[in-house]
Length: 129
Image (tube, rainbow, N blue to C red; front, side):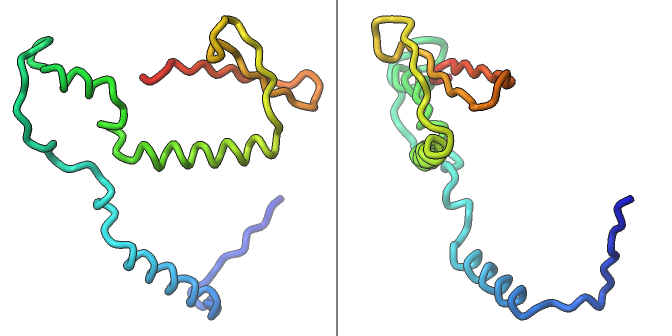
């Protein structure tokens, strides 16, 4: 049976914990308002062109297919993804690539494990959407 210790109000706080908390608070305050990274509440004003479909003009239609319009931090997210992929590849190795078409992007990457009869994870990415 696992026993748990109860902590009372008399638990001492070490100097290291106190200084670390103070440093973290200072960094958080110096970083500024996190909402500065958010999209503007309203899009910039522009003259709309002729309607292409419903009340959307051509620029509206183009923006509907452009994720950077909706993902304001797309570059940061992709950079973090690239960095994490590099770390994972360094740990587990590069995948084996199997082509199913003539275009280089028409292929399947397979990462193999060293264990016999492992579970299988299949991930199908549907593209930009």
